[in-house]
Length: 421
Ligand code: GUN
Ligand code: FE
View: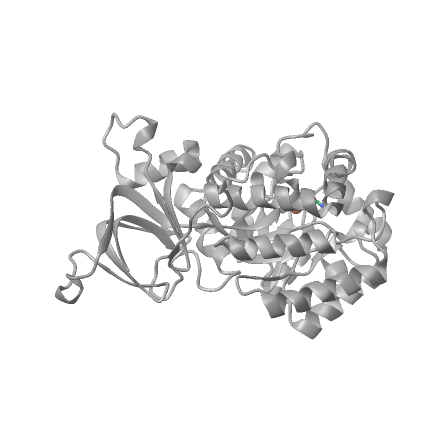
């Protein structure tokens, strides 16, 4: 396959490549080579010409609560813990009903497709049957990634609490079934967060991680009341990070921890050594008044930070808006912390494409050997009155674009059509 257009991508955090009116050769779903003029041997091949549109790597969202999408924008008068109790848990409880869950998960997959998120790692709910239905639907969607049933067995309302043994048994059943029946989606261990998981449950999940060599996703150090609660629950463990480690849930290079706002230097050294992916969720951290992750400092320290949505702690699944939110929050942070240089747009794009993509393999760039996951974007419909460079089109899309600007989506070299009618 050969695609022509204006390509932009970020091989590293401080480099953006722009290839104007270039030809890209894609072989077996992977990026092969760019050409300014098409070599003789390919002259007979059909070229898909996207004209003046820009083509960027598709987004990867490594922290998203699929069942919460239908609750986006609701309840930001509260901070994390009362927000969970008041607004989030009652909605997640509805997924006990598989028919309800099926409708909501189809909406979710359609929406992620629309906004150009081709890979994701999602929390489902605690319900085994609804989570399995979600996994089956995701497998048909043309997207790719990880899904986990949430594990939660303490400090919860009756409508949403699990028996520890049953939680572990349900998890193992989903692990085995997804290995047997799915190709595009695989299982990720998903303890909700330390306050909602007993030691026995965490240890059981850590053991499953070892047994099946699984990735893990959870929440870390998001809100100050949450952190104080973790200290109360585990007084003999040094810090929040080390609670997960104590139960085998900090798996090297295979763990995503969302938020990670209020970490000590010792926790950061540990997370760096383990290669834990820290999902920075700027919009959520503002919406739930959680705090501001010192992103620049963390990046300079060598921590593996990326940008993610955390819907519905945030109000939109559109990753372009999370790129913008990360830049905006870092500028506000810079005003009070002048040593923490604000994030530039190419850096933020890198964090939402190649950096987050590294959790899925060679994903998120147009370098040779990378999976061709891409979005074709045209912003002229916004006004079209001024000629715009490809980079300016990217800027306008990041700040004011939406799904209507995305003309085509590719995942693993395949054109992806809208998943569900
Ligand atoms: N911590 C535990 N559960 C949640 C959740 O659903 N959303 C967010 N943002 N933080 C959490
Ligand atoms: Fe979250």
